[in-house]
Image 1 (cartoon, rainbow, N blue to C red):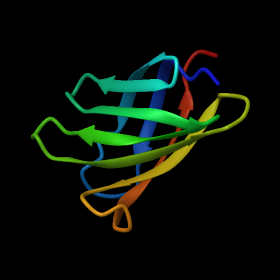
Image 2 (image 1 turned 120 degrees about the vertical axis):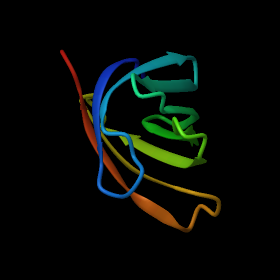
Image 3 (image 1 turned 60 degrees about the vertical axis):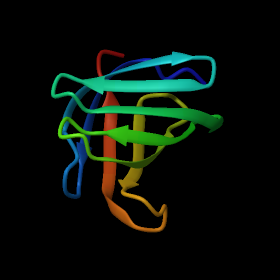
Image 4 (image 1 turned 45 degrees about the vertical axis):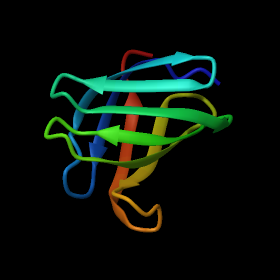
Amino acid sequence: MHVAGRWSLSGTGERFSTGTYTIKQVEQTVIGTNSHGTQFHGTMTVPGTVEGNWRGPNGRTGWITLLFTRDGKAVSGEYGYGDHDTALGRIVGHRIGQ
């Protein structure tokens, strides 16, 4: 599954930088960035599921899991700090321009 492109992402919890992200993909590696300095870097573990880490503009870091729909038009997921059992919030979004 190919998820590269521009995405509008919103977080329902604290400290998620809502806005437009540019997602790049090389094979199973997925990297997303926004203009505020937030980045995530992960691996597509199964088609449509990306597991990885994020770094905010203030230097804070944590984990992220993204689940892309089969048609590649929407995404949902969650994110947090440290232990993968403790989520800060959820993420929802859609691809822009497709």
